[in-house]
Length: 191
Image (cartoon, rainbow, N blue to C red; front, side, top):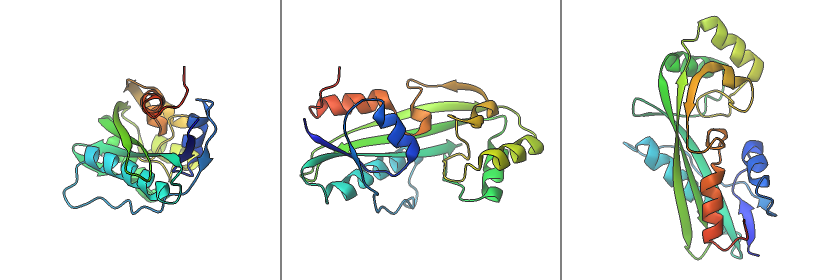
């Protein structure tokens, strides 16, 4: 079986990939996540997933490396990870009562340049949240490392009216349906 490395130290992605019951290692990608001028969210998610996989693959020439990145998109603009309380509150205030697209890029790559990639889109409809609800949520969950300022796998689920998705794992950060397809393409023995 080929060797697999997850190009992420995210505990969320690690837990999701473990569901596929394949052995894998974890490595931190040293990747600049700054959007390029004029870069649209779908292109950003794809580029960062590929860049993360390529960065780690360079140091693991015998392995397939899985990179993933998620970008929240509101009216064509990318929303990054908030990094702190005030920015998280501002992001959620901007999303209340609206639909936000979460673009998740996935790339499985080798150091020799071989690569397979996919993009998942999940549409989240936020409730018309009050400022108090937003503050309570942010203080309870502290979602500062999550695109869109929430954790759907935790308390964040109460912020939504609906989720429209082809893959329920995508919103957590690694669309397993697409990931399994890429792994099968690379020769990993999945059912």
